[in-house]
Length: 536
Image (cartoon, rainbow, N blue to C red; front, side, top):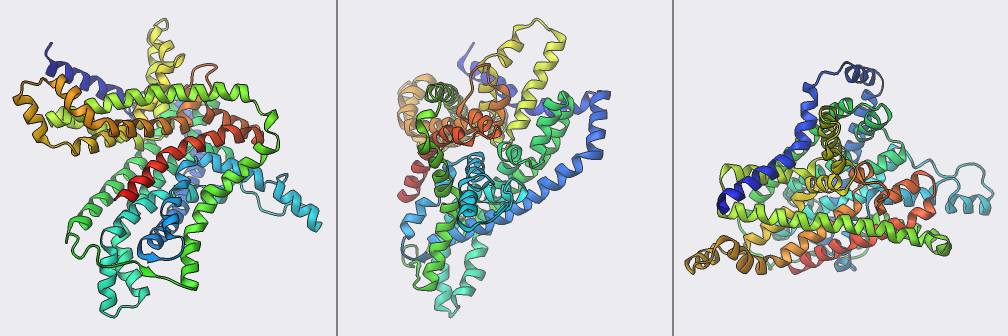
């Protein structure tokens, strides 16, 4: 078999592996099951309207919140000069390191009725009953999502404003426009496509969430899928519920792509004339204080306070914590993350190199399918993987395939690759974009074959991109909760799963140890991202 033929076969296999979970979920509607149809009718008459209203209300509140917080913080550090501006440029990225469910555990531990704050207030001021309202509700979930997901808007809006906003605001100032008019009529319209793209990404993360919604008792579509699968023991009903969530995600993904196209159009049109001449507007007094507050509040709410709240129980009784089991949980997380990262980088390099050599219809389709995985919620991927396993078990109960998918790490690594392949693929494609095509032509003229070209020319130039891709996939796998919760092999709990289980059992002090470990791991890509932004 020729190398080109082998490559085509591998691409088709990859396409099948990536498409299978989504195809199984969508194909569940073709399987008529009176029992699942009855469950769906019962859910439609009882809980589905609540799922819809709650998910819609949560998305609206989170969308408005991340748009306001992300845009305000991006405008503050990009358009204005005030004390601490350089610090806030990178500090505003820190909430990316903290998973949303970890922030939920931290605030609940500190603010609950038996928590240290309310206990101290009752003892000091003689108060009775609850001092603060309950945080475990939709409003609390909204606050958690806003201050952990606003960096999506901040990053894109900051890039859009840094492109031309400073120069255009300077031109508007020379024409006599006051600062308020420059902000409302120049800067914000420029950032609008970026804000829309960031909001779409934040809403996809909100819909995909299971940890916060489950722990706070918020009835969203993600929690409904798990209830239909586990509590009602009907995989068809769960899959048909997952299609509704998948349809909403597809709409959000289309909106995000449209906003990204508008961002590219706005960034390329008109060039960068006058770049470097205009400077951020200096602020002093009350305006400087407002800018500092716009940068301080998100960092405080999304990173500093959650970390401090988790450090308190950890330092108070660190000798009683299960350190021996912690090493086992960390080892499982590192093992799964390492395997997934290596496989994701290898597959991403195969896809990117194939697309570089030949952009035929098959290659383009496989690359597009691989790029869709990150937008698919973990709950949908889990249902899509287990549905074919259940069908296969009914047809051939003694086949070992079922065991390999459900009883080993194969199934969970498969889910990770479907979910996070796009992360590695984007990094590898950006690395290939920096390699001139003339390098390939010169190597071929010297008689270099395809494998030697990949090993001796491409790989030395792609090592940094591959390392960045592996790190991003590794961190995402470490923090992934929904897929890990259901697909992990027996006796192989990870840090994310243990943190969720301990918090669910109200053992929040013990949950601080794995939660802080996840935060520490999450800081690695944030540091790399902040360095990359400073290098621009």
